[in-house]
Amino acid sequence: MRWLSLLAACLLSSPLSAQVPKSPDAPEGTRTSKDVSYGPHERNKLDLTVPKADKPLPLVIWVHGGGWEFGDKAGNPAVLLLAKGYAVASINYRYSKQAVFPAQLHDCKAAVRFLRDNAAKYNLDPNAFGVWGASAGGHLVALLGTTGDVPELEGDAKTKTSSKVQAVCDWFGPTDLTKLSPQGAAANPVTKLLGGSTGEKAELAKLANPITHVTKNDAPFLTFHGDKDSLVPVSQSELLQAALTKAGVESELVVLKGADHGNGEFRTQVGNAENRKKLLAFFDRHLKAAPPK
Image (cartoon, rainbow, N blue to C red; front, side, top):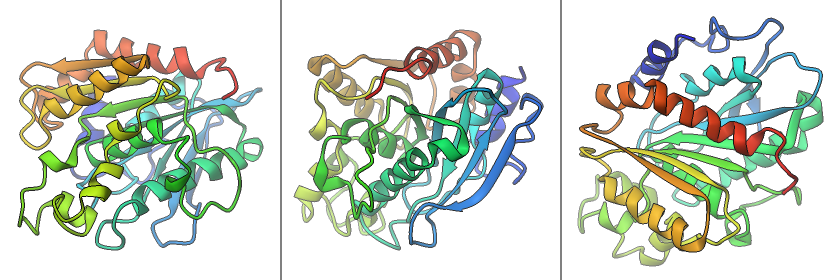
């Protein structure tokens, strides 16, 4: 598998070709549905790629980064799982300039519910949904993993379908936003997300922190973070790891030595044989033959 070169391309700022599923590793008969609407807003669109299979497949949903204010569903590293017996999706969600938090989480949850409601149509296993995200997307997937039992964060749900996920892979996502939004920094991405500084929006900042919602019933986590991250300090993931461990949630934090915020060193280390095996084993363990939840 040409994991390293494809993974590096997926993490570059410019997205991959729109023909994402045409990875050389995509099995014969793989089908893609692009720009599927999962909600009422302009950016409530997703791409879904499903290999041909004689039984429902586990699904991994990619959530893009971009400081909650830019980014796109194109360039989905989860396509590398297609050859391993997974369906993969990639979603867009509302930018902070369009709506403040928790709109972004509401959108992610709506996408999960939509895919679960349509599991039979797309040949998906509704009990085996994993999520994977980077940076702002890492923040959102961490919230998906910790708020499946928080009704006030479900948004305007049209169905009673669960938004819970069964596995979370978090790449250098923020957690405690109060440490990332200096007072008076109007241009700060966190300030834009909350519609004000964390001092002004203290309750909302608390709501936006996945650590706030950690319980023993949360999904298992696998987190990768560089110890030289200049945008989201590794301490952000260390705080989440400590909370998950204290609650008894299965979780692992992999600290990548010398790696910055998704830079070349991060790409090289997260794609090496050991970490590649770790990532694949994590999803296999929790999404293949996953018990109903």
